[in-house]
Amino acid sequence: MKTMQIEWLKFKKYPHIGKPLVSSKDRAWVENYVIDSQNIVRHKFVPLLHRVLTQRKFRPDESAPKNSSGKRIRTNKGKKERHIYYPSHLDSIIYSYYNDILTKAYEKYLSDKDYASVPVAYRKIPKNDLLEGNKCNIEFAADAFQFIRNNRHRRLSVIVADVTSFFDNLDHRLLHKQWKKVLNVEDLPADHYKIYKNLVDYKYVNENELFKRFQHKLIVERHKPNDASSIELKRKYVSKIYHLRHENVVAYCYADEFFREATNLIRVDKPFNQQIREKQGKQNKRGIPQGTPLSATLANIYMLDFDAKIYEEASKPYKNVYYQRYSDDLILICNQEDEKYFYDLIREEVEYKAHLEIQESKTHVYRYELDHNNALIGGIVKDGVVHTNKQLEYLGFVFEGDKVKVKASGFSKFYRNMKRSFRRGIHFAKQAHIPSNSLFERRLYKRFTHLGSKRRLKWMADCSSPTGYKRTTFYDWGNFISYLNKANAVMKEINQGDNIVKQYRKVWKKFHMLKKQAYKEGYSVNVPKK
Image (cartoon, rainbow, N blue to C red; front, side, top):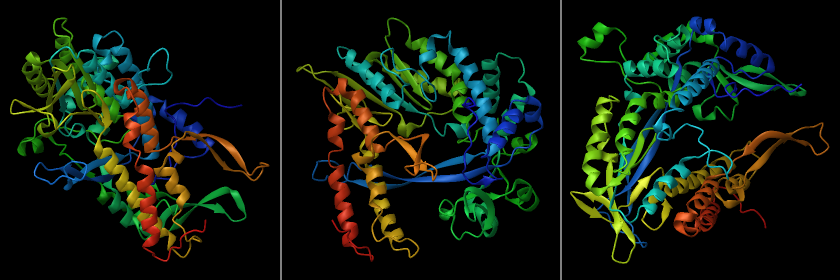
C-alpha cells in the first residue's frame, strides 16, 4: 500500500556529518522521532556546515565607454559573498517539521489581518481563480508594474528599499517575541525553545576544514559486487573537495566520529556570556543562519510589526498606496507629494520596529508621469533630478514605463555560466577515464538552449522493464530559457508583445559561437562528425 507523502519529511543526500537517511526503515523511525516533542527537547544538534557562495559583480560605470549597443561597458566590482549554513540530515528534517508548524501558525495569524497580502516571499499565494499554481517573483513584480500602469494618470514615486544583511542582523529578543505571537502563547513550549536557542546560538563547521580533516576516509556510496540493486558504504580518499559529487561522497564522517576527533573545528559567531558581550560593547545578540528550512519563515514572522505599521499608513483611502515586501526587498508606490513622508517612514520603522538598517546603496526612488504624448516616462531620482537612463529595477526585472525587461545582469550570469560550462566540457573531455572526445554536447544543449526548456518527466534505468527504463515521480523543470518564457507570458499584457522573448533571441547564436570556439581551440578534442 502506497503511503502518503509527508511534505516536511524529505530526505536529501548532500555530504554532511553523519550518514544520510535514505531507506524506508529510516523514514519510519525519523517520523516517529521528530513528532515527539520530548525527543526534540533532548536532541543533540550537530553543528551546521558553513559554505561561502561567491559571485562576481559586474556593474557599469558612468565614466565607462559605451559598446556598439550604446550601453556602458560593465566592469568587475569585486565579489558578492553569501554565507550559507546546512544542517545535518536529521536536523534538517526537524527544522522542516517545525517550519511546517510555524508556517501554518503564521498563515492563521495573518488570515484576519488586512496586511495579509503584503509579505509575499516564501509563501503559497494562489495566482487567481482561472490559473492553477502559486505566484512567484514574476507575478509579484508584474503586480507592482501593473499598479503603475493602471495609475499612469497620477504623478507617481516608487520607493525600492533593501535591508542591510537581513538574516545576519535579526534581533534575537524581537524574534523570540514574534515567535510567541504567532503561536499565541505566553512562553515558548520547551521543544520550540530548544529550536529557537539552537538557531540563535548556532555552532558551525567550515566545510573546507571538515574536508581536510577527513578527506583520507570520506564515506562514499558504492554498488555491491554483482548486485546493481544494492549499495554499501565504504571509506575513500578524495583529493579535491569539488570531486565529492563525482566520487558519490555521502558523508564526511560519522557523528560519533566527529565528536570524538574533530570538536576543535566547531566555531561560534557571537559570545554567549552576557558579561563578555557587555565587555565587548555588544548589545542584543543578532543573526540567524541562512540556509536552514526555518530561516525564511522566521524572517517573515520577524517583520510582522513592520508590515502592519507600513500597511496602516499606506492603506489610508486618500493615499492610494501600493506596498509589497519580498523578504528584505520592499516596494512602495505613492503620489510624488507623499514621497518624502513614506521614504522617512520606511527608514524609521525599519530601525525602530525591526531593529535593522536600510542599505543605502540599494535603496532608490523613481518617479513616473505622463508626457505630452501620453507616454509614461521617468527614471531614478538623484539630487532631486529624474534620470531616465536608469529605470526601476525590482525582483530581477526592469520597468521602463511602456515595457518590462529581464535585468541585463541575469543574462550576463547566464552567459558566464555557459562559457564556464564549455571550459569544463573541454577539461573533462581530455580525461583519460572518460571515453569521449566531444564536449558532452547533449548536456550543454539541455542547460543553455530552448531544447532543454520544456518540463519533462524523468526516467531511470530498470533492467526488469521491457524498455530498460521506468517512470519516476520527478521532473526536469527546464533552464533559464524556461524562466524567460514564463516571464514573457506573465508580462505580455504589460508589454503588449513578446519583448522578453526578443531578449534571448541571440542565445542560440552565442551558444554555437562558443561551441565552435571550444572545438577550434583544440585541447585534443575532435569535432564530431555530422
